[in-house]
Length: 533
Image (cartoon, rainbow, N blue to C red; front, side, top):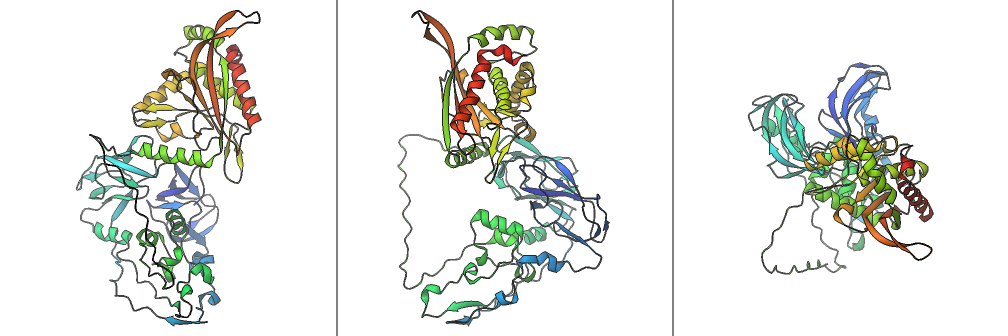
């Protein structure tokens, strides 16, 4: 699975355009892949015969996951799929030194895997935004037994950014609904089945849940004698054995903190697949005799409430805000730079601009324009921390924080440095309206390189904002306040001051760099005509 966008982590096979046995030429379209941004064609770069398809239509595959094999007709591809995960003969030999090999009791026979062809397709929760981890079913637009056509709206789903419609890509009858309204479902979780009327969808679900998984191979595990009780549990990692697992299974295990050496594989030759990780349940272990049993600490007592109260379920948006901003604050080393800006000339110019502008221009629009132009002069601020590298963007996309009832959204004004104040104003107003109506689409909030949060309209003098990942900086804007200033002769005169605070990720931006950027923003706002020429 190729990486088709900068934020893509996995792709969903929307359609296969080739089947096993077809000849493939370089440039042919193998499949349509739904990414986090769009549905795109996947071209073949090799010529030969399509020998193997490992992902069904509608299934998700992580970036770099195996999707298919192309080669010579009749070529043995199975050894290629096992690849580096196949242990060597030497690794497969259990060590018998100071230990006895004990064979586990034979397992109860499982029913043979179903080979029934089922004309039905599982509908999964799609990833509708770059930060979405789960969705909440707001309402079903179809009920079991209804006919479904491609393009029909199956349900409304609340993501962390908006409430969006879930379209059907399959035609048939809605056979099964697995999620009640108001329930949350993780991305790629099963929500429904669509297929031929009367199809045995339960068998299809059983396959997914592992009910029809083939019998696992019995593996001989070395068990230490009582002479060395501390070595009673020998991990695969310690013994040098390598675990056979699919890339997706490895990724899921890492995310869930599961030791793959303790998971039994149901794939070919005991290979661990996604289903095995999903179904894995840790078993209770008997502590060694030499080790005293550990007692879990008692949970902290929750004080009884005094008076009436209400527990409000956490929305998808609030969960994402909590997760992303907590990660940002505790991962990125923040530092803050505050500066006062004289807004007298900006206040004098604004009525003149609004007299000729098709939309009303706000001071926030001026701040957006000033920051966009300043970012062109200070590319180090228009950057992102990517772990092993710093990405400097050649474009300037300003994220503008918009308050909504459930939290905060950050729609993006793209190429803000190239747009006029009236165009910026029109876009911000349009996005604010969409945000409040929950009609923003993923393209509206993705791709920011710098963010601005303005609480001046609430009378806030100054504040510090948490950086919006993956940006390196965010500017917090306070209200414009009239204060007293003094001339050289001691005469007092009024001046309109706006305080701004720049939050910087010290991994990317240093104090001098951030200060120089703020000086440029200050200069542009104090001489606003310079932004118009």
